[in-house]
Amino acid sequence: MIDAALKRRFTGQVAVVTGAAGGIGSAIARRLADEEAVTVVCDIDETAANEVASSIGRAGGKADFVPFDLADGDACRKAVGDIVARYGQIDVLVNNAGVNRRGDLLSLSEDDWEASFAVNVHPLFHLCRAVLPRMAARGGGAIVNTASQWGLNPAGAHIAYNVTKAAVVAFTRSLARDHAMDGVRVNAVCPGEIRTPMLESGLARTGRTVADLDAEVPFGRIGTPEEVASLVAFLASDEVPYMCGSIVEITGGQAVG
Ligand code: NAD
Image 1 (cartoon, rainbow, N blue to C red):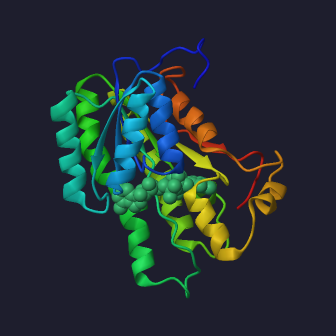
Image 2: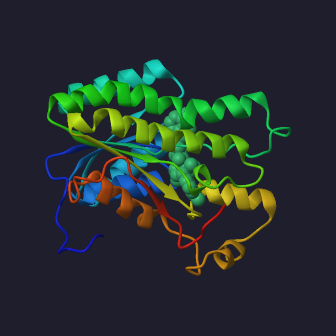
């Protein structure tokens, strides 16, 4: 739970989080709900999304879940329509879902390349197009995108991931530039190594350990989903309204992938 002295920055707001059944996404959903947002847990994994929303409810928060496949543009538009029909508004959109199809140009399949764009990039287009005019009509809102440190400093043998996360960075800056005047603040976070199922799947593949990764981080350890969630909540709040188009790294001092 968050510090009792902390302000409840999202009271009366509706927050939508994608990939919210996963490691970082579920931490973001819990954090926003802790700060009194009505939080909508979106994920392709219906059972896990239901469980995250239920556990938020058991902890005293308000949450709902809307399962859909982000790779389907029609499903993205329908989900936004359903959420607005149910709650009347969307104040915060966190585009957090992602996949990490590993490989270099020659080892990656065409499917890996296309699936990376289908989940990491295209949903930002569909969801923001559906949400942004509604935010603007209500005087504003906040969009936070989960990019990656590797979108700034490419890691070896992760070409699809690096390129799609660089696209998230460029998308964030473009959207901020075009829509700041509508009161919609758009920012992105660039996490380094964070302990989640995505990271664990990479370790399982390479035989490396968390201790190996810890040793590579100047701070002495890899990050937690809750640390990323804390940053996302800060960017989604109106604590620093002038922050718009910012790309914020959270890496424990690690400079490259
Ligand atoms: P995760 O695998 O735990 O969670 C990803 C979630 O996205 C899962 O719940 C999954 O079901 C969902 N998802 C995948 N495809 C989907 C689809 N087609 N439709 C709807 N939902 C879908 O991963 P995570 O580590 O929590 O990653 C969250 C975000 O953080 C991703 O964008 C990832 O690229 C980024 N990130 C992670 C790290 C890290 O070290 N873990 C570092 C930098 C950036």
